[in-house]
Image (cartoon, rainbow, N blue to C red):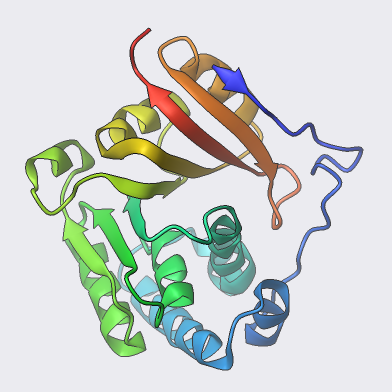
Length: 230
């Protein structure tokens, strides 16, 4: 493993100020997006609250903090792959971070966002959000392990995941979709550094830890040059 980790500062977050996002105006200021993007996210938030009553899309304790815990947390990933065209989001669940990224990139030409989720009800939710927000995104209802059998899923520029699996397993999921220029961006918590060390026992890769903008203990794990040949 080639590590280029960013050590946390005294505040535990690499010296980076945390954002506080309570609604569309805060989101627009934090991420520099348009009014149209925020309108789409407001529809998303409304649908998430409505569907949450019937199925467990997110932790109930976070439903009152959608803009901070889910939207802003997801949106911060985009800063590390602003020019990337093809995105693959693994284990999308309620759409984090993949659907938020798709909404933020809506209207940009030649972008492809694929969300992979095995739960049919969650896929139905994602399709409704995409339809009602007018967002171009492909929802793939499948187990991650079977993705290699689908001809429409090939090499991509970016692989993302949030709260899905330990890093070692995530790399096993992601490696079939890695090309020479592919990067993975995984949203992780306080154990990110130890997960990197554990993954390095089975994988060769370059990595960098970015401080989260929404959680003092959170990290974004960036992986490139991934190779399983240890």
